[in-house]
Image (cartoon, rainbow, N blue to C red; front, side, top):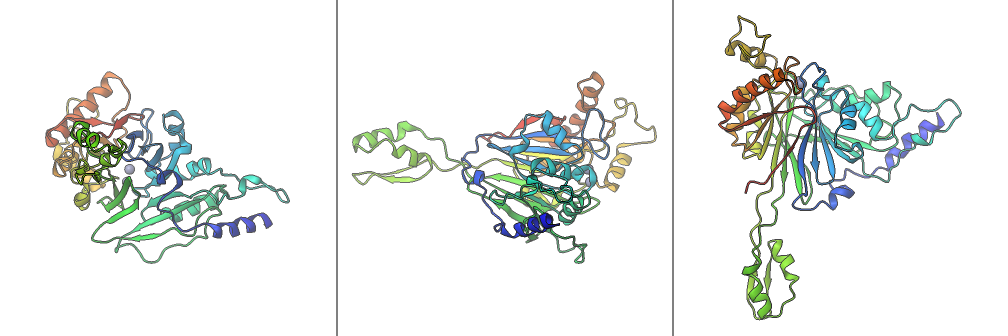
Length: 406
Ligand SMILES: [Zn+2]
Ligand SMILES: [Zn+2]
């Protein structure tokens, strides 16, 4: 008990929420690599070829995790993402297929331990308050789920975390309040919705994250990750003659490259190239209608949209004879989900440049067999007809680079 009391006291030493961690403070612009790795692409039930929902967004040297279905840490171990690089976790909704893997992942990432026998000290249960907390963002219930999961499994963490919840006006005001976890920062925020969305829930000089509600069977959000404007393309030939003529150090090129203006010795002013639009990634949770996120999601370079159910007569051997596209769409919507056509139409509506589908029914395999490829090609084709451009169906461990719109 003495040990536990000390641990609970240490929690109050945590600083306020940091909007810039030690690594994000040094994030380069443009971000050296921005890519998505799918860790799980199944819907309600996993299969031998698809794990439950999770994807990692590589942001330079950091990893941001979006959803954390069961066995996500196993998938991470098999992927090219490093668990120790996870800086933030974004939860779209608290359905089990998106969050059941969070407690074990935290236990692994944050040096978890199951306590010590009476009278024994366990150094692993000392919370290291000198490091920034792992930040978790999610809808209401995320904090209670994490607290309950850790409390009832007697899990003590050795590194700090914090949970910020995205609150909607329609959320119930009364909720179960569990005590703060041993490593939980007390500075988790309840972020109110403003003008129908949560703008800049995280921001630093290179990148920001906003969110908006999307329609599903429970509170669910989509996230929009936007890179800050990046330096324009510089043409040295345009500047060198003036720089040489005025004997100005060539190092001014660095300022010009950043889009700044520089006055030379003879009064000439050189203007760096204007900054270009950074990249935008839209990652949706489960949805039958994501339209509330449109104002944030327009002109995305990459949209990740679920496509749980499809009507594939003659291709999917499990197609029921009585089904039509309309009946499949109606059933998908009634369960809060989308068809490939719905995903394609949404991608077109927001003028996305690339569409990747995920969150597939267990009947759509994710391996490289001929049958799997035939089904997934047909699903991609259904979405592509609405989108007007080619579409990719995600597989577990597939990575997609987010490229500039040049
Ligand atoms: Zn789901
Ligand atoms: Zn769901």
